[in-house]
Length: 120
Image (cartoon, rainbow, N blue to C red; front, side):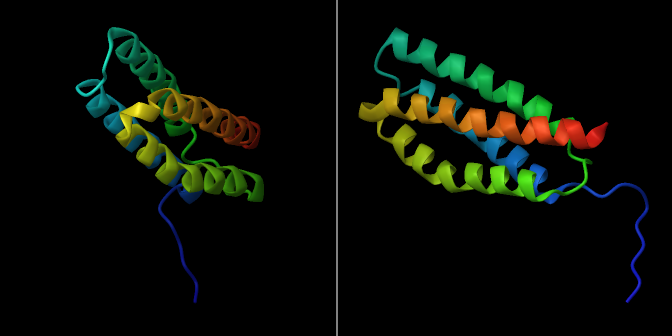
């Protein structure tokens, strides 16, 4: 079967990671209403800003070709998202959840670096 496309094809790993990051921003925004202190709100807002930066950088690379390395990083992000969601839901573990978000963002950054190299 011969298939043709009308233009560039999206990198499905980056598309999925981009969608997960957008959903995480929404979930963090919702958690502000339940935050116990002003300091917690500040920490959540900081993470929202960090995640939004990755939403932008990932979104700008959605048409980069597929690679095993991007797939590996994207799958690592997808695997950690449910745990982050659970920790955000348990505000007693808010500090741990925000730390998990920060750690996950370093994986996003690695995927973005690979994608940027493939774009050149």
